[in-house]
Image 1 (cartoon, rainbow over the protein chains, first blue to last red):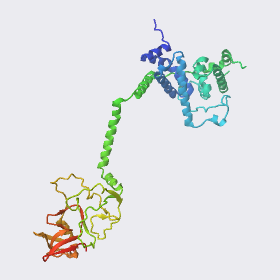
Image 2 (image 1 turned 60 degrees about the horizontal axis):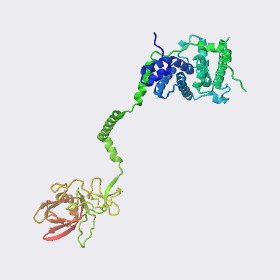
Image 3 (image 1 turned 60 degrees about the vertical axis):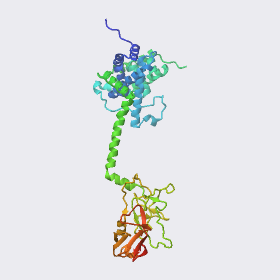
Image 4 (image 1 turned 30 degrees about the vertical axis):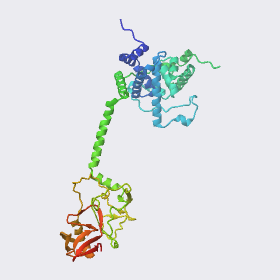
Length: 194
Length: 265
């Protein structure tokens, strides 16, 4: 009879009690979803892997502060999101350029843009056709506030409730942002929508 | 009142897009992901661990060794030593009071600047040490007012004598031993510089010769004179003078008569 799979909370408790293999199991369970999430967020595979590892390190050293009344997946996505946002802001400071400041548009009216990252995607071999490349670039060009819920909901398959918990927003605001993000994507990906 | 869209409505309206997004390939983490996470955790744990005494020594010992090597190199470097000496402020020690004022002969005034000698001890024995009210001060080097140009020490303004660096007649830094042989200036050297060569006799020092155009010759000392005292102090062939003093007068016996000769002309 196969051994029953332990829940996230059980693994966390075991880790708190010094079971290093339990934490390794958590890493194995979440490493690919987290890497994929960060990859779609940053459009940079190496950076995504680096931040995913950093996420697990932070989880490990803060594991005593984790309360099991929250879903572990929410907790770990939230940490990863914060790290990714910090990374993007660091990139912005490096570029010293933001078109949203020049336009001066209202933040929530959809006139906020980010400069798409036109660098050649190092993971081109992973995208087997032009369509995937265009989708990846369209997602990466979304403003953060739309990009995060779109990736979590439509690519990672998280529930609306979980997305709102990760973003620390109300459910209505989360749905609104998802809706707005999809509208922006439809405009960019019209040729693939029939 | 704004009606929130139902999830089913949203998904239905956006089904085509969500299917498109769900169709893009997902990337996976590298195979060594767990190993790299473990390595990072170990590295972070090591960095956060307090170093303790061993950790402090790991820094302190090389730092001390580096400091010692640097200090030794600087001390052994002659260029550095010279530079350090030159860069010091030009100051010289000054004794506020004259070290020794030889007793003046009543009724006679010093007409010429004295001929001054210096050694590493007080001029007239016994040696004396500087008292508390004779504290040393430092002044900038000024022009010498020793017009005779025969002084071994420089004279400052307002009657203060300025001694070259290293010569301080008031201070003997060495411990004094009764049996210690101290470096002084012999009477033969002093008289030799005045231009006198002599032979010791029972009554004093008989002048054998006087150099032409010397201080002694210009002052009137002649061959055959018997020198009895210098600045009022009786002298013999063994007399050794310490410190700084001015050779001002010399008492000789000439043809049985005492003759007081003022030096410096």
